[in-house]
Image 1 (cartoon, rainbow, N blue to C red):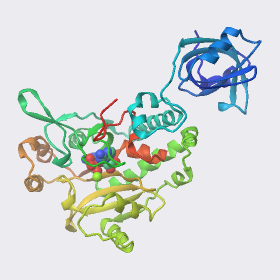
Image 2: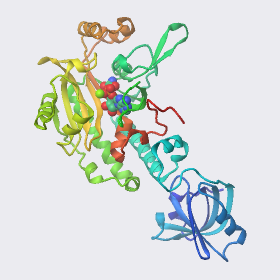
Image 3: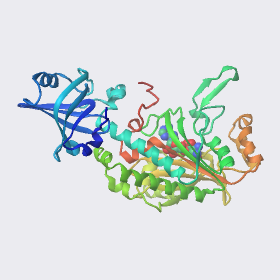
Image 4: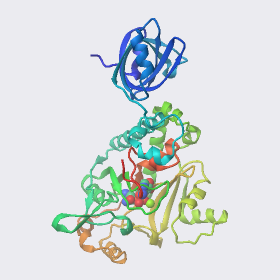
Length: 431
Ligand code: 4AD
Ligand code: MG
């Protein structure tokens, strides 16, 4: 049987086709019944005229509920007024599985109800659009690095130590070896990869036992992390800038229909072109002071601070050189001011906050040994990482981009929970 999908109906105008999918919606008007069929590739209205089809078929069309799985045969017609621009003049309807009382109805449901039914909620038009954009962003990310000579390298998920501070570690028993931790970031392994391959990226799930219940935090999220040998902080910022432009411009070009379904104001995304503004942490603190925020130099920015800083710009803003004390142990200090780390964060506009965090890495063995002591980290667990500084150490840098924060920003979502198929949060690990 030839497989015909709603997305390629344009090639079958005037021909008889059979489509399989689910009943998205239906209505009836006099002697005509309309079924909107969805098949994952699109939506099409199928029209059943009394006289063209048997009474049995009309009765079935009347009886079956939303999300029943069905097969419809009919002639494809161009119909600019119909959803998707085509219509099916139906001849036959076969019910595969009749659904009754589908729990998600067009009325408003509370968010907890929708999250409890996430396995079904995914079928809604809005969620399908988000899933498609997420998929296209993933492809854009991979294309970007693949086209620039990077090698994809998969880091382990079960790890012996922390990368990003010990307060957000998920711990698990590991046979006779004691504890293992779910990875917070693939970075340390990416650094080993960069010394083997020059330019690498990792892309996979990462975990943080975040105790914060915010719209920007998940406990399981996906992160892409490029790492490049011989890169300094400036090279790292150049790469981040080109990367963001590429992702956003690709989605604008390739996912117009989905952005439209989400009612995304794309004029704001169109501005995401190089060069992006670059400011130092000190300059960011000045912005806060000018906006009457009581902020003490040396602290990290909170979500509200990030919003004020990014609101000064209509593009993502790159903030560099943070106080070393609030950043991770592996970051190299600024040779011009040892209180600062060669760190970089990129803050998305429209209040979406930090989407990228990165840095130039400490490449000196003795300094790194000192840091590990200062941060009270177990040196033994880091011996392999220190080897990267013992054998052919070079300057290097990289960053991590949070996939869900990026999806959320590009789609214009209110909360990260819609940016991943099955969100994991402090208070939710089902379905
Ligand atoms: O700034 P972070 O913690 O940086 C790192 O993990 C570095 N090791 C990356 C690197 O240099 N290779 O996290 C990077 C990004 C953040 O900017 C944010 O987008 C995302 O990961 N992120 C989260 N996303 C969702 N939920 C959370 N709890 C997140 N924590 C970080
Ligand atoms: Mg960060």
